[in-house]
Length: 335
Image (cartoon, rainbow, N blue to C red; front, top):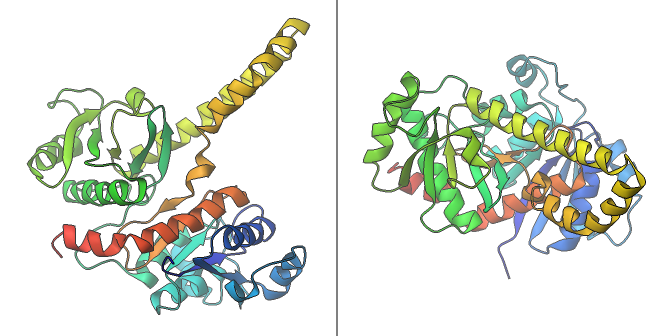
């Protein structure tokens, strides 16, 4: 039997809390018997949600009361310091004290990032933990690192991002010798801003990663590399542009199919194939973005995440723990 993994889930985080987080917890423990979930948040609200479901493995879902909620617009540092009984702070402390292996939240990104570093803490030697989501490509998935944690990064940070990303892709996704590329405005080595120009030769010198050079934004969704390295300003623009284009294209395709009788008939004919193709680019299948390099796992899902994405975020945590990713990061960075 696989090692049991305990995941703390922020039941008050996100646009659809507590309904979607609670549903995700229920589905997760029903689908896998190696997971325990601690739902943290306002106990009375969580209990009301749990009453909707039958045949729940009671011994694998429990509630931890937290009376406060950190709202999206609150300053993260002040919120973490001031709301000690918030679902985010209480949940992260569970990981810090070894009462849980991981924390998943759809709540305030800033609070999760600050709390992850201040409460859970970094692995010794890790300079900056990056947020690293899996993004769908025509060849499967790629890891975008960093997408939101470190807007102002140094070359040494990007080198660590590349190493941690390689470990993740190899052990969680199963990509042997993952290809690492740095985001740039051209393929030539001499191109790019100061950060890219300084980082490029450092990545070339790394014997423990498979660095293939620069990657342009247009090649990312073609699966041009397995690990896409950049600072968070660039990464956040990339991921939000991808999400926006995908949403717009799907909306326009649906609208186009309804313009005439012919298009409606054609739409019915292509619907099964189109649905199958679009499913491959469904980001919710891959969970959230782990904050790599912490002493415990912290995963951030979208604020608008539904149960499916949150559930896969919980599954991510199980794989992360069972594959000893933190230990491998420490070993690989020679810490």
